Image (cartoon, rainbow, N blue to C red; front, side, top):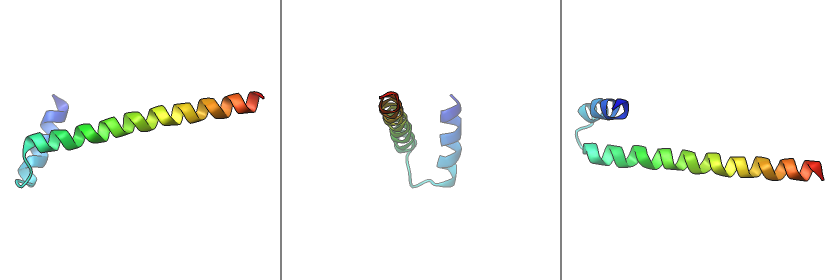
Length: 53
């Protein structure tokens, strides 16, 4: 609900973009962040295992 409110305000300032497009863009950024976090965790685990060796 909070994301909807923020995106609807953003839509008011930039009418050229539909609300659906704003959601898709925000979702893509969230997914990217999640993937980045997962990759970072994998890298940290590899470094940790190499340090143990």
